[in-house]
Image 1: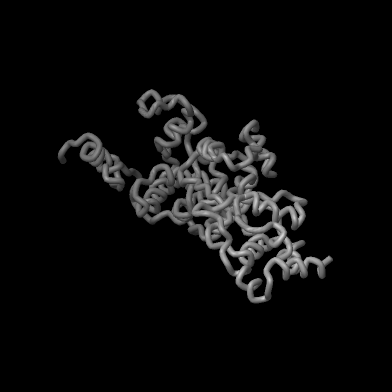
Image 2: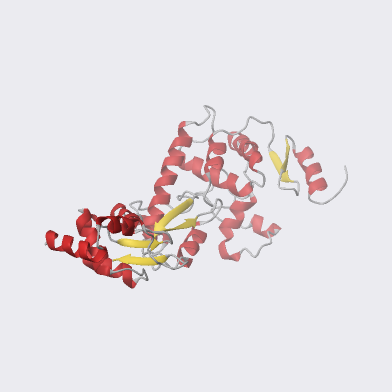
Length: 329
């Protein structure tokens, strides 16, 4: 059979020199990349036909002969590929053998809630929506973490995926990424850190993430919360209240909201809330375990993204009047 294919190849190309030219000559594909889907179990002959059916202007029998004569025809991997302009028969086979699938990317943003993560996954038309009908608790069970809250457990980053990938697979990668980042950060924690476990560090990091307007302020903000935790002072951080309100939050935080108790209301309950409130990034994780040494117990947004830090309530009130109410000193 191989000898017969060799004759076919010779007859179609006419000479060894022409064969070498053909192997290195770009396939006619047009300006836009061609989409090639190879299903599991497709024969090499079927792959050659699929390439032509995708829009490559070449002879399927000739392409199949090249696959066979290369000795790599059984190494072609199923998957979803893009054939860009300039692809030659040789580079095409190399791509198929290596399984270099066409990859898309999805970015999970620092500070997002798990609800926002699920919404982002649902918008990706090429992702298989295996978790669409599952609750957050059921998703964590599927990921092997029964009883672990989903909030904050996924690392914000850009993830590549192939067409048809499961949303659960992407979540699993993000979960394991957070495991690694949290473990690495916890190993670098300060000796006097007022946190007992990596889980507590994750909660504090999520608060730091949501409270920070300017990246350079993260360690200082973490220092304020560390001081409050050490002295038993209420954390009194608005993002936890907003998180606890859920869909009831309309964009305006009112005094009555601060006084309405929920498990996440740090104005009414001491210590850390029971779960993270968002996905913290690497910088927030490090700030939470290495808070800046500071005498400050208070901070207020200055309106330019940065914060003003105060050691006393009187100083803080003056800062609030200046930066929030526009009153002069």
